[in-house]
Length: 206
Image 1 (cartoon, rainbow, N blue to C red):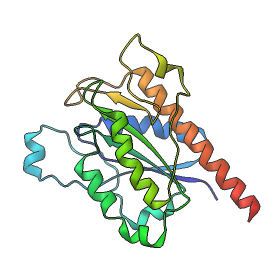
Image 2: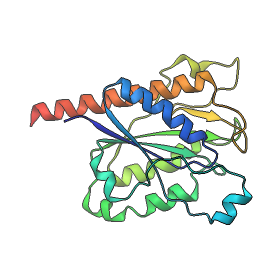
Image 3: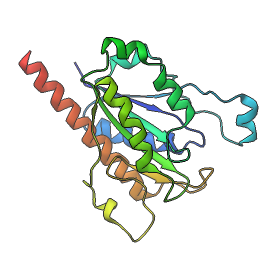
Image 4: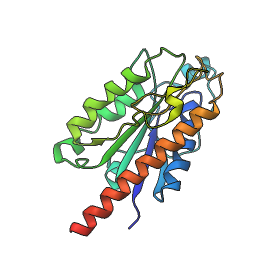
């Protein structure tokens, strides 16, 4: 049975969605099965219109019960004041029924991000997600400094040891750079290899 990875995102200006497509390419290169989902929106249509944000991407809305089907979950999280947005927090806060049963324990988790500027809190946003992983018994897989782009100081490059990322401006006006795309691909490929290797070893021991 194929290793199954879910990418669960929240996106306003499609930066996280577009980054998730690069993560997905990397995951698929590792040979795993991948599906992108988005968390439910909590803002009213009137507020969204005032923000001049585009239509949501055509990907399914994730449900709590669906999470248990994945071997690993990569969360695409835009940053709000150095932490995750309310929409992602609301979804994670609604998983208590899974927590009480240990339904996600032993599964894998990863994170990737976008911020409006270089100092917008990509690392602190990761740190706000880690307690959720710990309480559920999810095994967190950081990107680490595994790619030379993270050492590059010749241009703005999003991402950190915690995961790939993009620096995009307040309304997504800066396109995801080639180096940021390559980081996202590398993170997806590495995450897929780790989860599939673990699953294969676990099946051999069964």
